[in-house]
Length: 317
Picture: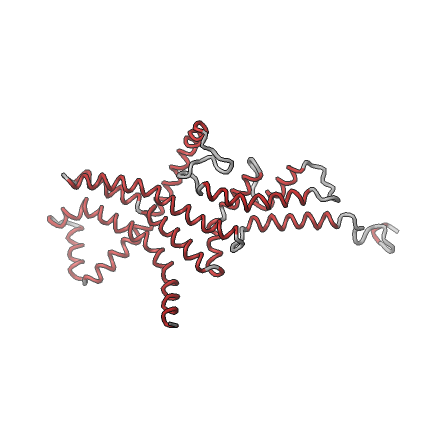
């Protein structure tokens, strides 16, 4: 039994590493298949130039060595492919974000937490509701601290609260204070996920599995589109239908990747609600709130070393 649990622990420690290379390898092998369909199949029948050199190199190494070399090339290609997919996704989101916001406002799909539909937002509406149950009490606690007697700040409470949240979030307020605080917590989802590595290994395993699945699906979108288009362009008969189906499947993978990414975020938010991880920005807000309460409590006490104290050399006597 002890050997079984030891084997499970070893396997659990290896799984995160396997998940890290799974998406680049899958994307890289798909790109290599596209390259072979466009060039390799004809080059193998009529080798010339580089194709002759590659064929000669293949004959000099073993099959295992060739497999290792192809796997290494596939991994490198996959890493660049996933990076390119992320860059293109951010560019596309930046381009269509105003259009989506206008569409949601026109169709009245906006919510108090997000103006984007679930398939465009970083997190699902259910996650926004759960996140609100964590952020709202901290804001109420901070607002109550600003109303304690003994404070000499004459500014309106909303301005004081805005300054307090800005110091905790370390960014300027562009709109609602609650929106700023939620956005700061959302930016820390990945950091909170890494907090679970040592303290919550089971939760981290679930979070890492969902995140890796999202990365795998997102990483296959671009090479899947390329493979489908290639089959449509150079194929005939049924192969064109297969290529068209692959293009549709690659587009569906965009939404499936988004679903898995939101499921991973749900794990983090659930851990945050249960106190199993901490949000750094909420911790800083709590510290700032405690500082306000302590300063208000000590406001009525005479300052230490006042000029009226006996023997004070600063009084000019």
